[in-house]
Length: 172
Image 1 (cartoon, rainbow, N blue to C red):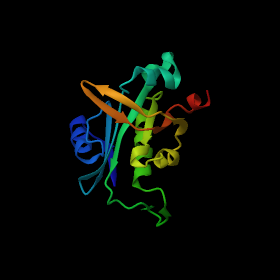
Image 2 (cartoon, helix red, strand yellow; image 1 turned 90 degrees about the vertical axis):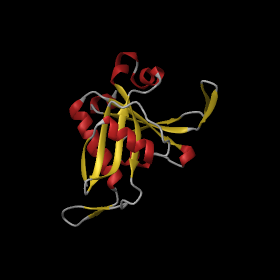
Image 3 (cartoon, rainbow, N blue to C red; image 1 turned 135 degrees about the horizontal axis):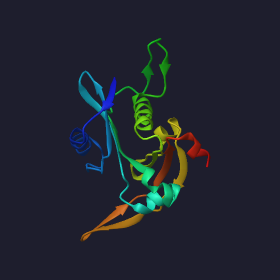
Image 4 (tube, rainbow, N blue to C red; image 1 turned 120 degrees about the vertical axis):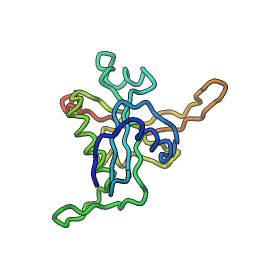
């Protein structure tokens, strides 16, 4: 499996087709996982749509550093365990390895970036992959109704996780 940055067009097309939301998120950074030159995973990061999220995570003085890991898709056919070069089998599969690689890339690009991400309870997600990659759990959001033009969209309860590129930020 090869991990690398990808352009926003490939990221958008892939998440619209493959991710359960089938919607394009705001994208500032995009990464892909490839096997035999075929895309097997996408992770995108962008500015959250709500300024209150940015302010609420680290305060107004650090709001510009807050981004959202807003899409993660991995091909369901990928194995849930990984064998390393020594032949040892690891229970953390490609998803955790891919996220870990992306976080290291982001740390190099933006040393003070703070990421927020959500695990959707409607999809029965609890954030296992965020727990496995050392994110900080900050609780759940309340379900709400979102008005988009004339439409009302029901938003489910979500588990929220935060990741700090600068480990000193995690302690404060």
